[in-house]
Image (tube, rainbow, N blue to C red):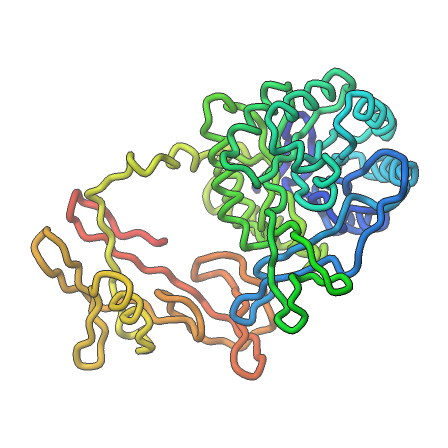
Length: 452
């Protein structure tokens, strides 16, 4: 049986699934309910110093939907906690006392002065939480006040504040990085130089998700006006994976623990982050969309996959994909891969032909009602192959689908044994079994057929 116990920068939890600093972690009621469902840890919604109360606007959320599926991307213009500091501290202390085996990390954001950080660290340390996370990532609202990403975009500030915090607290210090930079390595290396115990990434991406063409204002709209916000959700996962991988393979950051964030919705998403070096997986948008119970599927899915692969602990596969992440110039230019079309599965939608004919290499042709693939190039002219993949109804290329009416199920990843949610005509949610079938011709060296 797979052991999902997680330890990152000295912070232990029964599994690697943590709720990220956000509305789901802004109060005791939420966090206790999350722990009851099985979440391994939380990062408490960002606390600030005492002073004038934080006031949030309404509405403060926007979203991007894709082909009828919600939510592809999520945008917010919410600020840090609008609840009193003392109330938050009391609740954190109670929750940690009642749930000692769960990771309790507290997110912090205060003005960029040593005294401000020293003061709040002392008060947070009283709660006996496991660590603090320095919020250097928030791209809206607080950044206009010289905090959040205004700090995270200046490596010298990151190093300076991280060093202050290490001097003034016994707790492990996580630095949450902003993706709104040209190169993620500069802030990551600054965190290392400042003595940080771990980095968390990514925070949200600066964005406008839509424009209301009647009101002529960016969404979300507040009394006729809109502002840029922080973008998250499934759409940002590829960006997050890339930034995590860059840090994991960087010699100057080698050994720095990473808490992965960005579009994590399923156990497979989390496993991908861990394969690229992440120690824990923080979740926000998916919990806001589907509720705290999704962690049960994450836990069971990861356990099942690890058992199938023979991985006993998270460390057995953590970082294994980093060695295969390289620069483009180091890729094998002689390696070729072509599609093997299965006519029995093809539904004759023609999408593969359209994509290849109009935008690629005209390598798929139609003959007697069947699609055929040809590999064109300077290695023997045209190579004809057994025909490929049918399409999902209304979906992307190179899938085949066997339609089975089922209750609504969320997408858990690629593979013929995994459920996915697609909305068919009339709003009926059906289950499709998805297969990716690629055959590799021996153009460079003998290679076996594999699944992607």
